[in-house]
Amino acid sequence: MSVSIGTAGLSSTEAADYTRSVLDIAMRLAEVMFSNGAGAEDVVSAVLAITRAYGVRNVDADVTYSVIELSHENPSTHETISRSRNVRYRTLDYFTLTRVSNLIAELVENPLEVPEARRAIARIVSAPALYPRMLRRFGWSLVGAGAAFLIGGNWIVAVAALLATMFIDYLTSALANRRVPVFFQTLAGGAVGPLVAAAVHSIDPTANTTLIVVATIIMLLAGVTTFGAVHDALSGFYVTGTARFVEAMFVTGGLVAGVGASSLLVARFGLMLEINPSSATGFGNLPVQLAASVLIVLGFALAVQLPVRAVWAACVLGAVAELVYVLALDTMIGTVFGAAIAALAVGLLAALMARLVRVPPLVIVVSGLVPLVPGLILFTGLMQLSEGSLDGVLSMLAAASVAVALAAGAILGQYLVQAVWGPVRALPRRFVGPLMALPVKLNRSRADKF
Image (cartoon, rainbow, N blue to C red; front, side, top):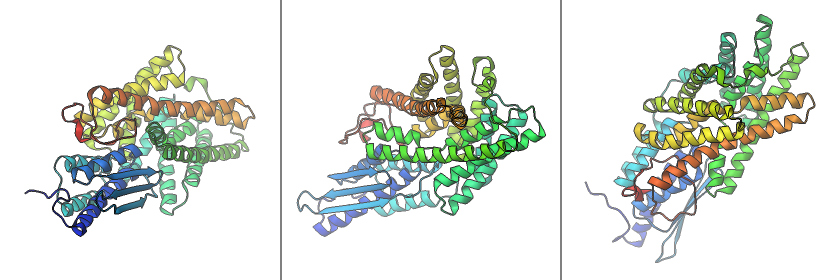
């Protein structure tokens, strides 16, 4: 069945109605993308691709933190049609993001009738979750347990971290349902770790209970928007990128406040949380670290509803990231450059593996980098600050540097691959970053669609 594309042959009223319908489709797709983890450049590129495929030109799109704006000017009548949407709540739902990304690819290749396109979007939005709620909650628990093993914990510490992170996810979800600000959600979540550590210490005084706290920090930092902030800033969306950085700082600040207040409380009862240097990542226990990295990625994949076909790819990338990071540290180049090199390797491999498992690169890149979240460095800085040492400030800056290095390294890897193999974009673009949340095609003959 042929689909009517463009406004040729339509009256001015019919052309305006058609343009509004196309802008509505593009806006609904942009909202779903942005609310489920996509960056600003991906959203704008998708909007321009959709409107171009439907024959609507002269469209301007922009994203400013939580506001998506579209406008179209009729070149003959100079009439302007605009759409605006405020995306107040964002989450990480990679199943929905993958489905809407694939729908965008389908619409660009073979546009559907406007009513059918609307129904397709509605089916995606109203679809049930890929994994049951309890399985997703158990996924966050696996992130905590894997993090405990990764930083040197034993089975007692890992089980305690699993239970602590499960309770944290339940607590933060309950607060989110009541529209409590994210700062207070992470504050409450951060306070759980030291309390569980104190309980475990009373049961087994020989256990390194501080690792439980670090594991909960890694779990809470896994969903922080540092990656999106760096991607937006590097792509030219400085306002959006800066706002996301501020959001990440507030989330981290709530985490630090919660951990700090709870640590002071347990210290009044005689439990002093200290960092055990032997718990740091090292080359001597590589098999356990690789297994722990895979466990973390598996748990994160369940928590963010990564499509089943892509779970193995994310696990492989997580193991590669940990391996490269440990090897880089063994050469004494430092944690920041080590994280950047590991993320670069993940970015390069993800561009190819995303084609194999038919998902956007973003969903497996972010999942693969979770084991390198700088929870141990952040906790070290927090403890140093609580002792009145200015070294804590340096540790906090080091943690922020590692987080930025992870995002920048992965984005650079994607940029190098897409610069060599595509996509060449026919759309006018004022940005420089790679596409991360769209199904890119690594060949120049077919890449003009994006």
